[in-house]
Image (tube, rainbow, N blue to C red; front, side, top):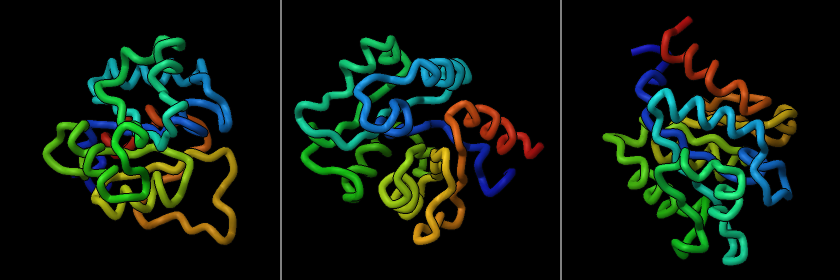
Length: 164
């Protein structure tokens, strides 16, 4: 097993705002489409895992961008009745991932607590996506990785899977 089991990633769960869409935007970043397409073509199961309000259904933005076809499931808090960082949210992600264990899920997002620390606590792997490093008062949890752009994700997965 290479790099602490990273090679067994089967599902990637993505946050929406600040990850697939620029912060405070309702539209999917066109550059994210390229990454989603590549990851899907490599056989990863993709899940959207987003905190939402009823007026923030992410499906419309995904359809408009042509990105809906890449996702096997959409986990939106307004539909579930609970949100990140509640444990039930991560249970719903694991169920949608259809994997043998939460360690086969990579959670990608821009919030250290909701997208990194809690998924790791639940047994998932996690990547913090930030163009700037965490602030001095923030602490990247052990086992988490940091990427500055989504375009780095396929290369990171290649590196972790091969150990090269």
